[in-house]
Image 1 (cartoon, rainbow, N blue to C red):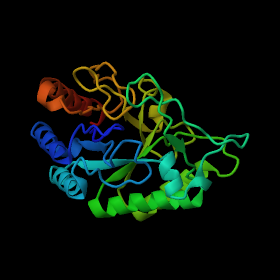
Image 2: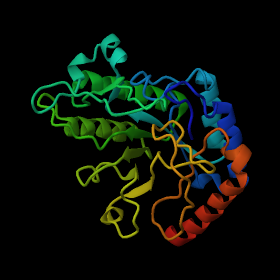
Image 3: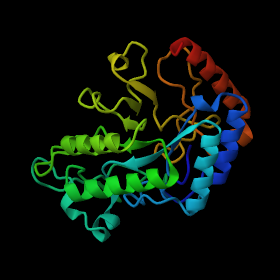
Length: 293
């Protein structure tokens, strides 16, 4: 479910999201639906690592109504938190300079490859922080705990959890392990949802959204499960919503692929492409018969 993008464009308010979820629940068992919230915390990546509900999408009240409504439909909701990302401005204002990732040559890591607004130039506004640094890890845990406890979310999406910098000061992998252990000890039946993991991560993160592990015979499926990546295009022109890709041609999902069927929902998905949503729902139920029976 795409919420608020980097530019501040709102794809779906929280109230609209609930209306869409009700429409879906009329067509399939809500217990089979996992709602992945991307950009729930305001401007995607720009606001990292503050992690408070987007005012433009409806604020705390709107998020509470949406999650409460989703739960009544039997659905589960997982919001997205960046394991490493921070706006440069926020890094300084929040006092996380000690957590900034450094290279093996002890130079500050710079993220200068992402274009956010389709102006043919990159916007180097974020930098990687190292969750191996104790203060930043505690901040991240505090925000995940706060959102989970206040809104009764069902797990967490750990954005860029597959990042492994060669930082000479802090061990990111050990820090990530500590963060996940804390969440597992604090909550029962709590989904840890990662991105782009490798065999190093499979023992602690059971579920991913991934672009490379989609072939049916990939060894990944022996150990973990995956959904389609956030960059999957939505029905219609293939909008990637909050994800920086912009457009990715929509492709119909296949029953014979073990990757969990995934539907990207942007502002016009239900209003203009309900017929394609119906096809995805129908295919998802057939997929369940094929892979879960």
